[in-house]
Length: 149
Ligand code: CO
Image (cartoon, rainbow, N blue to C red):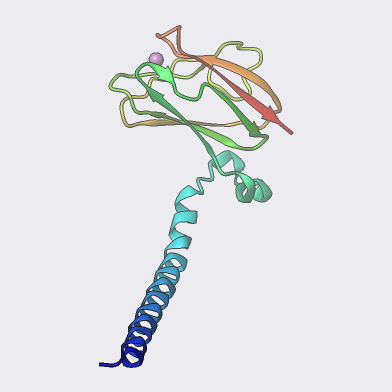
């Protein structure tokens, strides 16, 4: 085979590879688009108290505070008025979320509502302010939710 012939074979192989990769990427992109709606739906968690506020359902992503090894993993969160915070118990014991100040709860409970391993607890905040909370019976577990307008 001449050098020229070998060069044409190389170009042919390269072209087939390029078309193959382009087709594969295009199919992958189409697959992602098809999967996207279900991902969006699973993140949308409207609660009974914000069903009347349609603009907030669209804007509210929902904030999650994980509980692990006897700690609120992200103890200080900032959210917008109307947003929901969901605490997820990824620990192997029960925990609770209780307002520090019963006169300024922002919607946090003032009574002890224990939730166990794998369970979640949600509060929708409809008032701006800074709301401190703790876990009963673990007084060292503390957190703050800052709600802006
Ligand atoms: Co606790």
